[in-house]
Length: 260
Image (cartoon, rainbow, N blue to C red; front, side, top):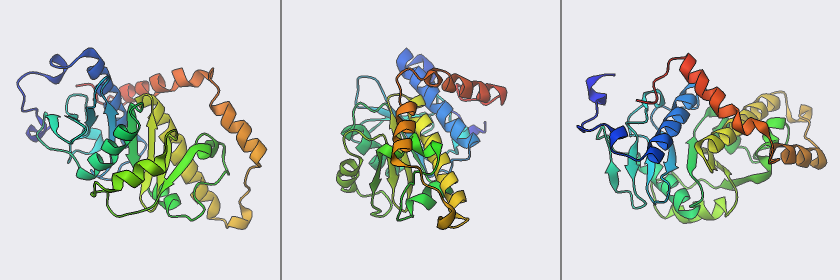
């Protein structure tokens, strides 16, 4: 890494945080690197966050780093008021990131991780009046619990937090931000990442299918869609314990540095 990305703290982050925080940092950094691999990035302008156990503090990316530059040690720690607790590179954070992620963590304290993206396909579907359609198996992973938030401008206004939290609701883990992008939250980094993967894939499939004209697009029956959604959400689905380790192995094979 270049000199500008060297920590300005004398003591390594790993030596001054709990084991629980370090593991959360590692998982969140891995999610950023995986997002770079899957091309979910929008230069430096989107953000993932993770709440620290038993606190109102959360981790978020330093403003100015590309996703493939993020590691466990350079993540920023801030509190629910936006005060910086730890910023190893002194880069600060994206204000819109704090408005969105601070809002979700406050409104849904059970959510450990929140992901927000601006992929082309995600923004394309967010601009469609029809929203996400039940036309693919991927869509059935998320379509039954998608909520929508109307566009109010770049998320710099703290007052937007009220409508954002209201539109998300008390249970949904998936939101499409109209004319803006996608958002998922989960009980772990893995959970939020899994939802975003299926949501983004569903959007890509929808854009591709609609390119041939809506008259050629076959929507699922309600019964088939409900059955697929229930199957995805069955409590004994073994993939929930296998997919994240497989993704971490992908990073290891690519020799991606996300732990330092």
